[in-house]
Length: 228
Image 1 (cartoon, rainbow, N blue to C red):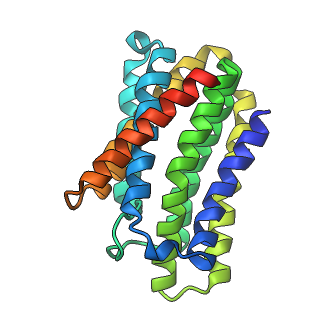
Image 2: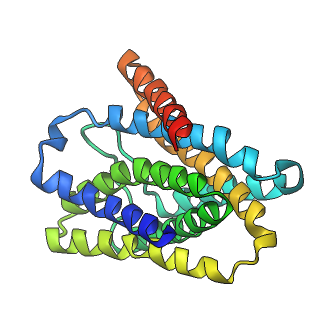
């Protein structure tokens, strides 16, 4: 089942590029989407992952996840964009490598979470999808503005998306004794992504609707938690 969840996560990368190409998403203030995603990702870390991570024993992995993704984002210089115009970032295959590293970790996290508790795997997948759709849009925008053809944009997103099933497959060699450590690592990465990437990007300008979008994302996660 977690392979299917990993494939759903992969499709979210591709969906970001397709939305930019074939919808009116570029006319929508995407900071609301980014704000909503941040609410889901942060809530998943605090309400789901940390309680399952045995954090007293694995706090170092929690911090490692945070700082690993901090360094990755700063080196690759690719993050979700909440404004109509994105700042110049590194694009192309360097960005694809950075996204792929991120996605392998998420794929392992989805599989480990599902094997720990199926509902946890589902919620991790939803948080990944919430984050990856705006990131996919950002990647498509930046590559388009850098002069890449649409086919090259989609090839990059497909390549990055394939890393989720690869990560899920790689989880097969992870011993169960490391499951809580991996969950702690993913929690740390989600805290950075949710706060250091999504939330800061959404709040480049004060907007009460963005605040409500963030809160809505958290509420949606809690509602889903009650039903899954």
